[in-house]
Length: 357
Image (cartoon, rainbow, N blue to C red; front, side, top):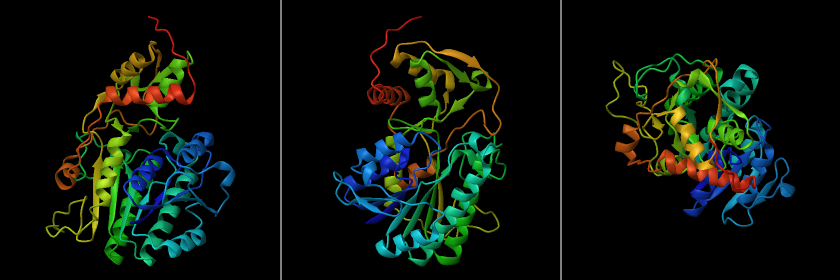
């Protein structure tokens, strides 16, 4: 297949590009390399895929030196003209849109970034897919869309009309926009609601990265909601395995969809929503204990109240992804944290540290 992966300098996008190339697809990666977090990490991910910083220029396609059938282009989703040219040139069979302004708390500070990237940018992707008759659009949604929902585990069949952050609202908006295009233009679309993805090359604004850095630097870690937090931590390899299965199963209409009892996760149109997580909820302090075990240092903790825009618990019902696409997450939290800490030490060249009580 000819595949476009947007957000290819990002955490999940970087891993997905390598997976798709290894399974034989022709892949184009796109990213605007913004400075929401350390751009050096983004450039180093790109370098790992054979794309070097000195070769990158806006709008210029760069061929990988070590991954066959991979090219990268620095482009912004709001650049409608640039996107149109790219889609016209490659006639993509499938698109995986992972590019977005991420982060719940940042949406309280810079809301316009979320409208530009997650709404306007996503509209441009939809329009390009529509006009170039792309066979399947897969896109990143988020567990944050569940908002004030307290029914656990979170099910794609439940209502998600009470977001608690603009980020969450933008992701719910993407699902609504995608349904309109699936209905109007018969464009197959699949939303993936990611649940707390972690692993090597992860984002520096996520808990595992923040905790690891602080513990190794001898600084306090911030533990919100006084430690009463639970997350469905999902290792990146399991996420990539799930996305790969979605590539092989385009969204179809649900012949049993009932307008009298509408299922939010499917439609008469070729439209699907899946949760993609591990399907287990882990206490945040237990997660911290795994980090401490692998670093060999006990964390100094600062307990704080729940932050605005955050929720105390997430837990994915992944039953539909399992039953329909045979999705099976395999990596335990213990194994996943170990892999991350080993990567972090190597990437930042930390020496082994002695444990202390």
